[in-house]
Length: 183
Image 1 (cartoon, helix red, strand yellow):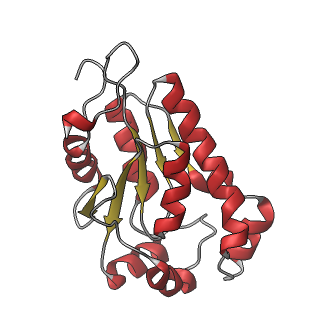
Image 2 (spheres, rainbow, N blue to C red):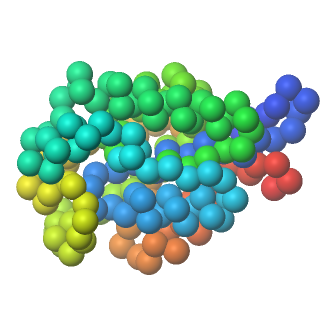
């Protein structure tokens, strides 16, 4: 994969911009934070880019439609683009369940690497049921699974099953990534 690592005009390898994707309960935020630490790269959670009204809708069990999602995805794309332009690389946790959502992010950051975290329904439901302080209710899991479009062969990325400790998943993810400066 190293040959596809973005390079600067001077030929130096750039740190990767990674989008950790998947349905609720896969551990996107946890794995993305750990991966960002390993890469010494900025981290963000795309949930923080949602408008308060949209968070309230999801908390009430109402899935967002594509019209509402678009400005959110564009804001996430701008964040990716800024880090890519700065050469810092980055890691962001973002559901990006559909190909067209990832296309919006890819338009902003063409070299983005998508890390798709996956698990079975029972494990996801158990994880969602255990967590507290998150706006996404378990009732939206089936909607998310129905919406999910796995990475296609032409999408730059990889899929990892989340049945092991988050640290092990982050380590495995780091091994899959193109190497950044010095690496």
